[in-house]
Amino acid sequence: MADLSDRVAALRTEDASLSAAIARDAEALRPMLPLVERLSLYPADTLLAAPVEPTRAISGLMVLRGLSKGLEQRAETMRARQARLTEVRATLEAQSQQLEGLSVQQTQQRDAVAAQARMARDAQTRSTRAAQAMASAVQAASRQAGTLQSAIDRLDTMETALQQQLDREAEAARRAHRNAEAAASVARAHAASPGTGVQSQANDGRGPVAGSVLTAWGASTDAGPASGITYAAAPGGNVRAPCTGRVDFAGDFRSYGQMVILDCGQHYRFVLAGLGSLGVDSGQAVARGASVGVMPGTSARRPALFVQLRHGRETVDPRPFL
Image 1 (cartoon, one colour):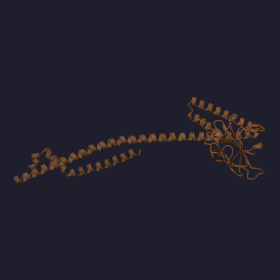
Image 2 (cartoon, rainbow, N blue to C red; image 1 turned 90 degrees about the horizontal axis):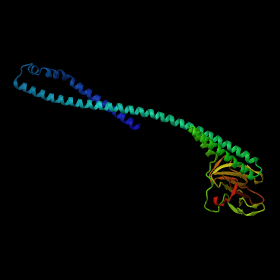
Image 3 (tube, one colour; image 1 turned 45 degrees about the horizontal axis):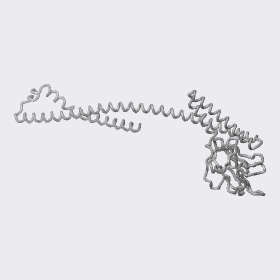
Image 4 (cartoon, rainbow, N blue to C red; image 1 turned 90 degrees about the vertical axis):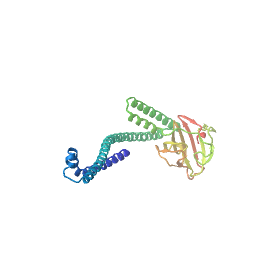
Protein backbone atom coordinates (compact mmCIF):
# COMPACT_ATOMS: atom_id res chain seq x y z
CA MET A 1 0.00 0.00 0.00
CA ALA A 2 2.86 2.38 0.76
CA ASP A 3 4.44 1.68 -2.65
CA LEU A 4 1.11 2.16 -4.41
CA SER A 5 0.45 5.40 -2.49
CA ASP A 6 3.85 6.73 -3.64
CA ARG A 7 3.04 5.90 -7.27
CA VAL A 8 -0.38 7.56 -7.01
CA ALA A 9 1.23 10.68 -5.52
CA ALA A 10 3.83 10.73 -8.36
CA LEU A 11 1.07 10.39 -10.97
CA ARG A 12 -0.89 13.25 -9.42
CA THR A 13 2.24 15.42 -9.49
CA GLU A 14 2.80 14.58 -13.16
CA ASP A 15 -0.88 15.28 -13.89
CA ALA A 16 -0.59 18.73 -12.33
CA SER A 17 2.67 19.46 -14.22
CA LEU A 18 1.21 18.40 -17.60
CA SER A 19 -1.99 20.38 -17.03
CA ALA A 20 0.04 23.49 -16.18
CA ALA A 21 2.26 23.07 -19.28
CA ILE A 22 -0.75 22.66 -21.58
CA ALA A 23 -2.37 25.75 -20.05
CA ARG A 24 0.83 27.78 -20.68
CA ASP A 25 0.98 26.60 -24.32
CA ALA A 26 -2.65 27.48 -24.84
CA GLU A 27 -2.12 30.93 -23.33
CA ALA A 28 0.89 31.56 -25.59
CA LEU A 29 -1.06 30.57 -28.73
CA ARG A 30 -4.20 32.56 -27.93
CA PRO A 31 -3.05 35.94 -29.46
CA MET A 32 -2.11 34.25 -32.75
CA LEU A 33 -5.31 32.27 -33.20
CA PRO A 34 -7.24 35.01 -35.09
CA LEU A 35 -4.40 35.36 -37.67
CA VAL A 36 -4.05 31.60 -38.02
CA GLU A 37 -7.79 31.27 -38.53
CA ARG A 38 -7.85 34.07 -41.18
CA LEU A 39 -4.88 32.56 -43.01
CA SER A 40 -6.60 29.18 -43.13
CA LEU A 41 -9.81 30.68 -44.49
CA TYR A 42 -8.57 33.50 -46.78
CA PRO A 43 -4.84 33.07 -47.47
CA ALA A 44 -4.67 35.29 -50.57
CA ASP A 45 -6.76 38.13 -49.14
CA THR A 46 -4.77 38.08 -45.91
CA LEU A 47 -1.40 38.32 -47.70
CA LEU A 48 -2.61 41.01 -50.12
CA ALA A 49 -4.53 43.03 -47.57
CA ALA A 50 -2.06 45.89 -47.99
CA PRO A 51 0.10 46.65 -51.07
CA VAL A 52 3.81 46.21 -50.28
CA GLU A 53 7.02 46.01 -52.22
CA PRO A 54 7.84 42.58 -53.67
CA THR A 55 10.89 42.14 -51.44
CA ARG A 56 8.86 42.92 -48.32
CA ALA A 57 6.11 40.56 -49.47
CA ILE A 58 8.66 37.77 -49.88
CA SER A 59 10.07 38.53 -46.42
CA GLY A 60 6.56 38.36 -44.98
CA LEU A 61 5.95 35.01 -46.61
CA MET A 62 9.15 33.66 -45.08
CA VAL A 63 8.13 34.94 -41.66
CA LEU A 64 4.73 33.34 -42.03
CA ARG A 65 6.37 30.09 -43.12
CA GLY A 66 8.59 30.07 -40.04
CA LEU A 67 5.65 30.98 -37.84
CA SER A 68 3.66 28.14 -39.32
CA LYS A 69 6.42 25.63 -38.54
CA GLY A 70 6.73 26.96 -34.98
CA LEU A 71 3.00 26.73 -34.47
CA GLU A 72 2.98 23.20 -35.85
CA GLN A 73 5.77 22.13 -33.47
CA ARG A 74 4.03 23.71 -30.49
CA ALA A 75 0.77 22.05 -31.45
CA GLU A 76 2.53 18.70 -31.72
CA THR A 77 4.04 19.21 -28.25
CA MET A 78 0.60 20.03 -26.90
CA ARG A 79 -0.89 16.91 -28.50
CA ALA A 80 1.87 14.73 -26.98
CA ARG A 81 1.32 16.28 -23.57
CA GLN A 82 -2.41 15.84 -23.87
CA ALA A 83 -1.96 12.18 -24.82
CA ARG A 84 0.38 11.64 -21.87
CA LEU A 85 -2.08 13.44 -19.58
CA THR A 86 -4.88 11.11 -20.74
CA GLU A 87 -2.64 8.09 -20.09
CA VAL A 88 -1.61 9.39 -16.64
CA ARG A 89 -5.22 10.01 -15.63
CA ALA A 90 -6.28 6.52 -16.74
CA THR A 91 -3.42 4.95 -14.76
CA LEU A 92 -4.17 7.20 -11.81
CA GLU A 93 -7.82 6.13 -11.82
CA ALA A 94 -6.90 2.42 -11.96
CA GLN A 95 -4.28 2.66 -9.23
CA SER A 96 -6.54 4.80 -7.04
CA GLN A 97 -9.20 2.11 -7.26
CA GLN A 98 -6.59 -0.55 -6.47
CA LEU A 99 -5.42 1.46 -3.45
CA GLU A 100 -8.99 1.85 -2.26
CA GLY A 101 -9.51 -1.91 -2.61
CA LEU A 102 -6.34 -2.61 -0.61
CA SER A 103 -7.50 -0.20 2.06
CA VAL A 104 -10.81 -2.05 2.37
CA GLN A 105 -8.96 -5.39 2.46
CA GLN A 106 -6.61 -4.08 5.14
CA THR A 107 -9.54 -2.95 7.27
CA GLN A 108 -11.18 -6.36 6.92
CA GLN A 109 -7.93 -8.13 7.83
CA ARG A 110 -7.42 -5.83 10.81
CA ASP A 111 -10.93 -6.60 12.05
CA ALA A 112 -10.35 -10.34 11.54
CA VAL A 113 -7.03 -10.23 13.44
CA ALA A 114 -8.67 -8.25 16.26
CA ALA A 115 -11.45 -10.85 16.47
CA GLN A 116 -8.89 -13.68 16.56
CA ALA A 117 -6.94 -11.85 19.26
CA ARG A 118 -10.09 -11.49 21.34
CA MET A 119 -10.83 -15.20 20.97
CA ALA A 120 -7.21 -16.04 21.88
CA ARG A 121 -7.42 -13.84 25.00
CA ASP A 122 -10.70 -15.47 25.99
CA ALA A 123 -9.20 -18.92 25.44
CA GLN A 124 -6.13 -17.97 27.49
CA THR A 125 -8.35 -16.65 30.29
CA ARG A 126 -10.32 -19.89 30.35
CA SER A 127 -7.08 -21.89 30.27
CA THR A 128 -5.66 -19.91 33.18
CA ARG A 129 -8.82 -20.43 35.20
CA ALA A 130 -8.75 -24.14 34.41
CA ALA A 131 -5.12 -24.36 35.54
CA GLN A 132 -5.89 -22.47 38.74
CA ALA A 133 -8.88 -24.71 39.44
CA MET A 134 -6.73 -27.76 38.76
CA ALA A 135 -4.03 -26.50 41.14
CA SER A 136 -6.57 -25.87 43.91
CA ALA A 137 -8.15 -29.29 43.45
CA VAL A 138 -4.74 -30.98 43.42
CA GLN A 139 -3.65 -29.20 46.60
CA ALA A 140 -6.86 -30.17 48.39
CA ALA A 141 -6.67 -33.79 47.21
CA SER A 142 -3.02 -34.07 48.27
CA ARG A 143 -3.71 -32.75 51.77
CA GLN A 144 -6.63 -35.15 52.19
CA ALA A 145 -4.55 -38.17 51.21
CA GLY A 146 -3.43 -40.39 54.04
CA THR A 147 -0.22 -41.62 52.39
CA LEU A 148 2.16 -40.45 49.67
CA GLN A 149 0.99 -43.33 47.46
CA SER A 150 -2.62 -42.25 47.93
CA ALA A 151 -1.74 -38.62 47.09
CA ILE A 152 0.06 -39.62 43.87
CA ASP A 153 -2.81 -41.92 42.89
CA ARG A 154 -5.31 -39.10 43.34
CA LEU A 155 -3.19 -36.70 41.31
CA ASP A 156 -2.80 -39.16 38.45
CA THR A 157 -6.51 -40.00 38.45
CA MET A 158 -7.47 -36.32 38.38
CA GLU A 159 -4.99 -35.58 35.60
CA THR A 160 -6.26 -38.48 33.47
CA ALA A 161 -9.89 -37.49 33.98
CA LEU A 162 -9.20 -33.84 33.14
CA GLN A 163 -7.25 -34.70 30.00
CA GLN A 164 -10.02 -37.01 28.80
CA GLN A 165 -12.66 -34.36 29.45
CA LEU A 166 -10.72 -31.68 27.57
CA ASP A 167 -10.03 -34.05 24.69
CA ARG A 168 -13.75 -34.77 24.42
CA GLU A 169 -14.58 -31.06 24.49
CA ALA A 170 -12.03 -30.28 21.76
CA GLU A 171 -13.24 -33.12 19.54
CA ALA A 172 -16.89 -32.09 19.97
CA ALA A 173 -16.04 -28.48 19.13
CA ARG A 174 -14.09 -29.53 16.03
CA ARG A 175 -16.98 -31.65 14.82
CA ALA A 176 -19.30 -28.67 15.27
CA HIS A 177 -16.78 -26.43 13.45
CA ARG A 178 -16.38 -24.27 16.55
CA ASN A 179 -12.66 -23.68 16.01
CA ALA A 180 -12.21 -21.06 18.72
CA GLU A 181 -13.85 -23.31 21.32
CA ALA A 182 -11.74 -26.26 20.17
CA ALA A 183 -8.58 -24.15 20.46
CA ALA A 184 -9.61 -23.15 23.99
CA SER A 185 -10.04 -26.79 24.99
CA VAL A 186 -6.64 -27.68 23.55
CA ALA A 187 -5.10 -24.73 25.40
CA ARG A 188 -6.67 -25.91 28.66
CA ALA A 189 -5.31 -29.39 28.01
CA HIS A 190 -1.81 -27.96 27.60
CA ALA A 191 -2.27 -25.89 30.75
CA ALA A 192 -3.32 -29.02 32.66
CA SER A 193 -0.08 -30.81 31.67
CA PRO A 194 2.59 -28.20 30.92
CA GLY A 195 5.63 -30.49 30.97
CA THR A 196 6.95 -32.82 28.29
CA GLY A 197 8.00 -35.65 30.57
CA VAL A 198 11.47 -36.46 31.91
CA GLN A 199 14.63 -36.54 29.82
CA SER A 200 17.74 -38.65 30.32
CA GLN A 201 20.64 -36.52 31.56
CA ALA A 202 24.42 -36.83 31.52
CA ASN A 203 25.45 -38.44 34.79
CA ASP A 204 27.33 -35.53 36.37
CA GLY A 205 26.70 -36.70 39.95
CA ARG A 206 25.05 -33.45 40.93
CA GLY A 207 21.48 -34.53 41.66
CA PRO A 208 18.85 -32.03 42.81
CA VAL A 209 20.91 -31.04 45.88
CA ALA A 210 24.60 -30.94 46.75
CA GLY A 211 25.52 -33.87 48.95
CA SER A 212 26.18 -37.60 49.05
CA VAL A 213 23.77 -40.51 48.55
CA LEU A 214 22.61 -42.09 51.81
CA THR A 215 20.23 -44.62 50.32
CA ALA A 216 20.32 -45.62 46.65
CA TRP A 217 17.38 -46.60 44.53
CA GLY A 218 16.36 -50.21 45.21
CA ALA A 219 18.63 -50.54 48.25
CA SER A 220 17.42 -52.85 51.03
CA THR A 221 15.62 -51.04 53.87
CA ASP A 222 13.39 -52.08 56.79
CA ALA A 223 10.36 -51.28 54.58
CA GLY A 224 11.71 -53.20 51.59
CA PRO A 225 13.59 -51.98 48.49
CA ALA A 226 14.03 -48.18 48.50
CA SER A 227 11.50 -46.49 46.23
CA GLY A 228 13.67 -43.41 45.78
CA ILE A 229 17.07 -41.88 46.51
CA THR A 230 17.93 -40.21 49.83
CA TYR A 231 20.67 -37.56 49.78
CA ALA A 232 22.63 -36.31 52.76
CA ALA A 233 22.59 -32.57 52.06
CA ALA A 234 24.39 -29.62 53.58
CA PRO A 235 22.32 -27.48 55.96
CA GLY A 236 20.61 -24.70 54.00
CA GLY A 237 21.50 -26.36 50.69
CA ASN A 238 19.60 -25.24 47.63
CA VAL A 239 17.18 -27.81 46.11
CA ARG A 240 16.75 -27.64 42.32
CA ALA A 241 13.86 -28.82 40.13
CA PRO A 242 14.87 -32.04 38.30
CA CYS A 243 12.49 -31.33 35.38
CA THR A 244 10.47 -28.59 33.73
CA GLY A 245 6.82 -28.63 34.72
CA ARG A 246 4.27 -27.39 37.23
CA VAL A 247 4.10 -27.72 41.02
CA ASP A 248 1.20 -30.02 41.95
CA PHE A 249 1.78 -29.73 45.68
CA ALA A 250 3.97 -27.59 47.91
CA GLY A 251 3.59 -27.81 51.67
CA ASP A 252 3.91 -29.88 54.81
CA PHE A 253 2.87 -33.52 54.28
CA ARG A 254 2.59 -36.06 57.07
CA SER A 255 5.99 -37.36 58.24
CA TYR A 256 7.71 -36.16 55.04
CA GLY A 257 7.97 -32.55 56.29
CA GLN A 258 8.06 -29.83 53.65
CA MET A 259 7.41 -31.57 50.33
CA VAL A 260 7.13 -30.64 46.65
CA ILE A 261 5.38 -32.76 44.01
CA LEU A 262 6.47 -31.60 40.57
CA ASP A 263 4.38 -32.59 37.52
CA CYS A 264 6.83 -33.09 34.65
CA GLY A 265 4.13 -34.02 32.10
CA GLN A 266 3.32 -37.33 30.42
CA HIS A 267 2.23 -38.63 33.87
CA TYR A 268 5.77 -38.29 35.32
CA ARG A 269 6.09 -36.69 38.77
CA PHE A 270 9.06 -36.02 41.01
CA VAL A 271 8.59 -36.04 44.78
CA LEU A 272 11.09 -33.96 46.80
CA ALA A 273 10.62 -34.34 50.57
CA GLY A 274 12.52 -33.19 53.64
CA LEU A 275 13.01 -29.53 52.70
CA GLY A 276 13.34 -26.86 55.39
CA SER A 277 11.50 -24.13 53.50
CA LEU A 278 9.79 -23.87 50.11
CA GLY A 279 10.42 -21.40 47.29
CA VAL A 280 7.46 -22.35 45.11
CA ASP A 281 3.67 -22.49 45.39
CA SER A 282 1.14 -25.01 44.10
CA GLY A 283 0.23 -24.33 40.48
CA GLN A 284 3.50 -22.51 39.75
CA ALA A 285 5.44 -23.34 36.58
CA VAL A 286 9.14 -24.07 37.06
CA ALA A 287 12.07 -24.82 34.75
CA ARG A 288 14.61 -27.59 35.22
CA GLY A 289 17.37 -26.38 37.54
CA ALA A 290 15.23 -23.68 39.15
CA SER A 291 15.26 -23.48 42.95
CA VAL A 292 12.20 -25.00 44.66
CA GLY A 293 13.41 -24.52 48.23
CA VAL A 294 16.27 -25.06 50.68
CA MET A 295 17.22 -27.73 53.17
CA PRO A 296 16.82 -27.13 56.94
CA GLY A 297 19.51 -24.84 58.29
CA THR A 298 20.28 -26.60 61.56
CA SER A 299 19.34 -29.97 63.00
CA ALA A 300 20.67 -32.66 65.30
CA ARG A 301 21.72 -34.66 62.27
CA ARG A 302 22.62 -33.83 58.70
CA PRO A 303 19.49 -32.92 56.64
CA ALA A 304 18.26 -35.59 54.21
CA LEU A 305 16.39 -35.05 50.94
CA PHE A 306 14.19 -37.87 49.67
CA VAL A 307 13.75 -37.93 45.86
CA GLN A 308 11.22 -40.20 44.20
CA LEU A 309 10.09 -40.42 40.56
CA ARG A 310 6.61 -41.68 39.66
CA HIS A 311 5.15 -42.62 36.29
CA GLY A 312 1.46 -42.85 36.94
CA ARG A 313 1.15 -44.98 40.05
CA GLU A 314 4.47 -46.78 39.60
CA THR A 315 7.84 -45.75 41.05
CA VAL A 316 10.69 -45.38 38.53
CA ASP A 317 14.46 -45.35 38.99
CA PRO A 318 15.21 -41.61 38.99
CA ARG A 319 18.99 -41.86 38.43
CA PRO A 320 18.97 -41.52 34.60
CA PHE A 321 16.92 -38.30 34.89
CA LEU A 322 18.89 -36.44 37.57
